[in-house]
View 1 (spheres, rainbow, N blue to C red):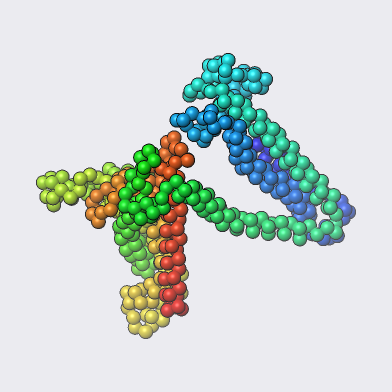
View 2 (cartoon, rainbow, N blue to C red):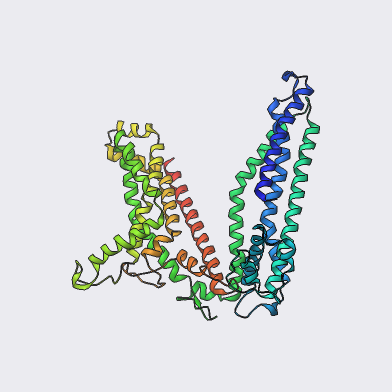
Length: 492
């Protein structure tokens, strides 16, 4: 049974449980709801949730764990000597899954039977041509060990799927029967349902934390694998980024970190003043009609895809800067300071434009949250409007403004497409904002693009870069928290 139909069946069974549980409770009370401990809906919800939640939880865990377990088991059946020197175990498993999917497709199309799929032998049959007879195209020939592993993969998947269907069905039906048997007029259904809903709320609140922990652990383990293959001193203290996939790469993060911070700094120089001034105008000076018109227009910038900003940097901002700073006598300044359209300044300006609504919108909300009594008190003491904004409103809103700047900084550090199209791909140290540079996120994409070998340091370095970026962002959060606490003590 396909998983989607199993999920639909669970919800149908849960709906049936709701109505039968509700009716049983009413019958036990003789149809008089006043004799029930809880409202009738709670009895139905108890049966429905008991039938649905345990079975659905097991289904989700099973669906997530099954592919990993089967991949591990099938991978162990392939001897190391059968793996070509030009390939890796991971690439061979990709071929295994591709062939298994091809066999599944041939069977689902109705032309091939399960017995035929199990009887195919790569040593005596051209598997690629055989599957082609059933309308299934494979990109390359199939080796015997790959076909054998693919057949094992299909058998294990079919067995595990059958077991999953049985276990989930037993849990759902068993939960329905158990909850139904406990349903009577004195059963505290409301207490049970509320405890169950509370558990779901706690799980939902913990999900983000668990996801963050999972992401960090996954990066940490791969980072440890990277440092087992590459010297940590070169990564943290080296000055050259030169991956070559020949085993003698220089993989220093410092040039990438410099480009990341440099571009982010220029972006914040553009976004913070413009965004903050826009927020002050909209919250303190603009009329209601102007605010209702300008604020949505400003926030439209946040909804533009970053690839559009990248195209804007490549086709508009970059050539405009070249006309000013480059091309020798043709430039407006008469000096060729900028050789091409890609540069730190190009990416920084466009990224700053993208960050303006992040700063302005959050700062506007924080400034509006400052109590009106503080403004009235300042004005009553004879301060002007501008003095009130500078000396009362902005200091009171400073913690929130720092949070807005932090969000903009984190967004700038993690940006990729604008950097790819606007800043270039050169990792180096330079103070010249008119030169091309690159960032950590761009190199992560580059190292993980294409047919990658996850056993090489040139690929695993992407996880070390990602973990370093995470630590950098965490450090910014801690620094912002210290600043916020300092000024809160001063103004509260």
